[in-house]
Length: 252
Image (cartoon, rainbow, N blue to C red):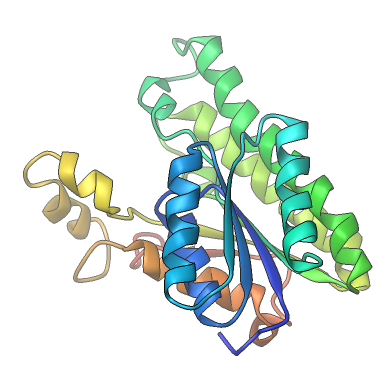
């Protein structure tokens, strides 16, 4: 990513990919506000960035709540003077284990999944766009999933939600692209975060590699690199796209 010392970004959802994105942007000179359900996690990421010479703030944020999202965006405005970039990376990766099939799934699982992935992403979008327009444009990247288009035999709520995010992204690109706002999605494959490496069953990573056309599983930094490109001026002519970063697990 090219140097962007005057730019300001919000990362909604600081775990794993979001944290790596915040650090990647800060390395390029972007001022970053990290919002996460865990205030401690958001502040720890921000402190690490500041210790490395960057500018960052970390705040608690529940993307399901409009007031919480509005406060996240307001922190960027109050702390750094505006908003240019938004990465929405929020997800509930625990409820997904209860997402069985369309006949048996508890509707509470559906409601929670839609709440975080669709309501949350919409709230972030509607809070950010007016602020980006004040700066003459900006860029949004949503974290989606191959589950939106590969047709799995399980996890229907998750797949529906991720497909909805892709639709939201295309709407934003179509409605505001002519006013300088770009929107894209990044669809990660299996990403081995620091936390899940500690809890994965024996042999899981080896099996995950076999499902790709690569020599290893993904890292948060792999995804952050694509997010940074899509947000930057170097990615200016990329708009309305879902970009798979999955080691070749899917090919299109």
